[in-house]
Length: 319
Length: 319
Image (cartoon, rainbow over all chains, first blue to last red):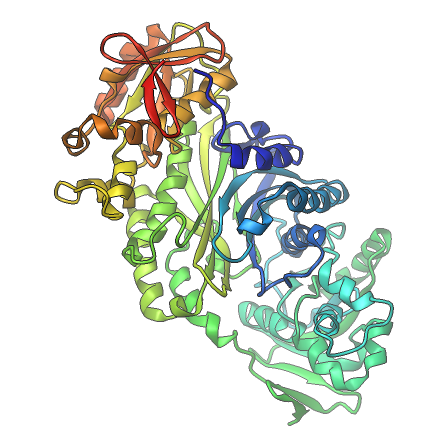
């Protein structure tokens, strides 16, 4: 008797195999093997995305997997780690159990694999009765002791961000038809974030993370974990041309909305020169927006008159 | 301004933090850190489970996470690896976004963490609009070069299994009310598989894997990957008392049904003594059910008259 793989999963295996790389054992076994390199540690992060919650049912198929991959890569960048590979689990509803859908989905991922030099190591594919649910565990590597943490910022360090802030949050609004988008720039930033994997700031920045929950909330994480305070001058926060066109009314969205996938770094004064050089070499815009203080737990956003802004759920106001 | 974590996720964080261990950085950062041990490789495996597909909506809450954990641990056991830790993503529908549900869920996992000596390294929690979806990436370690693969079985090696075969598949039938269960033994086997993590057969078995898709299909994987043939004597396949009570009518379910989470091993004749000793020391029943042949791709199941049985989807019959 010749035993065949269950036919409904055979075509999935066919597509996923093309994405596999070193360590995946060609997806033939129960697990992948990762051989450590001397002097390096592994960094592991996991994210999941649910249809109707994290992406829209009519989002282009080829962007769905790429977005999850890029969010995970951004987490690695936040820790200063070099991407290695990933495991992915797919829970597929009936309408996505077809070759056309899977081929487009994998095509998007395949492009990003080349771009970011990662490969599929393993995973699982199952049926889902309702929504598409994706989960990805991304593995990176970092020199021993050089992983960027959130708890090492010191009073006096500068607060820096890469790129522009708020585009992702505004992109979601444009896709919901709530604001107009200049040439689709914001929607693109929402659908396909650009993880800063080419800017490794371990050993230069004192603390770091990627901005995924909004600048305000994520700065709060560093403030809390490092037991410091923070002052940010709102006028220094870099915004894209498309975001600026929408005006001050959307400032709250920019600073609290999330989906930036830029880096938030604290950099000691004596490392600033080196940080700027490194960012220039990587072609990544790096902007100083404030500084760390010894007012433990206090995060203060100042407007251009030097007045503190208080962010409320319903809007923002001067205190 | 004091910045607080989004309140709807704060209680989740509270429960998950109690599950975290070495390398998780207390779940404060974007990712976990894993330091390699000299001479060891990492083994990584991922599985997901969807409500209504892999577990029943009325399954006891504390068994849901444990089942996923045990399936993953079984994959590690299949590779001969020692468990280290895991990342978990949870997509929670509204009715499971409460402290009572999460507390029970984490309590079950916590018990298994102690039992199997693993810890939560990281993950992600999101909302889901419909079903509960869980995904877990489990990390193990194995001596360099000693991972059990599927592609190293040789003609002449014996085919062995641990424990008893078919209980998980029959357990599902009992929970569906299709067969009667003796003292709930089969249902328990379905809900809480016992991964054979204490039987590390690297360096002893020639090939190995865990049986999750049914003995027939999983033996097919080894046959295909190792480019061998296989002969199995059905009368030698170990079955539990509860399974035997149901009689021959359920033989097909036992051999093709899946959810065993026992080990399937090929063992060269000169290693049999050592394998038996090791299994005895671990308190794991180990039974020889057949042997590998040079009939590439041919898997043959013989009844007690020595006649070949052919498994068809609709049932099984003599060829």
